[in-house]
Length: 67
Length: 256
Image 1: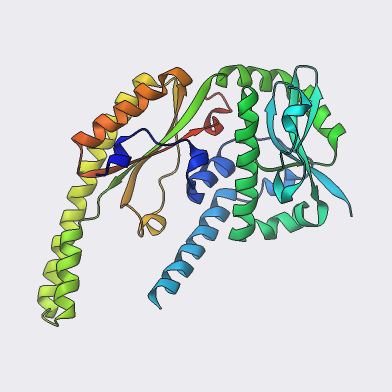
Image 2 (image 1 turned 30 degrees about the horizontal axis):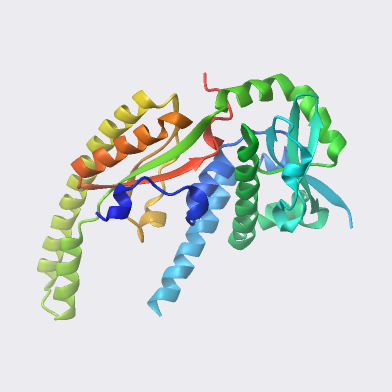
């Protein structure tokens, strides 16, 4: 364990927020309003989308790393 | 080109000067649409990128999703500097400012109550991971490199690794439960997020056994973080990760 881990975390603004943590909040939390367009978007499983997009990117990154 | 109204968060109205230079999605200027005691931070976005069909396709593109998500969060963070902020879900879009005002009139009392609930509070995210056991992995890799591994030896190793993995999971689950219990006493509320999938965390710190957001009074944050540090020291068998402080994204709706 490093000293950094023991210190209180720096505010988010000072660190790169992991995309997966951000999407957990932006896609699965937050106030849900119908909006003028979201009627059909509500049909889309947003969390599923984010996960699929992330998994795809993780795979791509791993493949790049393997080369 | 026609434009739509992208909404970031509900706030109590503040002087528009505070918005000077603030930009949102696609670098557009952020504006305040107010109605009575409530206001919404908005910016204009191009319809050809944010209407229903375009959104459906764009949400599948990680680079697009990431750019919009980070811009959204930046505006929400900036809004929270001026008082309580209630973030909206990504891609909350209205045709124009009048439609936003109509929404404020319809949902005003609910949004007001939620704003009061999150005032002077922050969200901390805590994740616990079972540590992958490096020892077995390394010895297997070494054996494979030197070509010493017979089929039977390989299977034996795999079995041992799996058992060690199960033990690590059990230990981390117990540690996570204790940590969660301790943090919940300090927090005002908690929300569970989905566990991050093995595939996503395989390159990371191990298998995710806890992913919870806590609503914490701003003045209790140090005590909250101290508690995490304390548990970290006592449970070397798992990896504990903290994110925050977040604007209380996970507490915008009262859970019954």
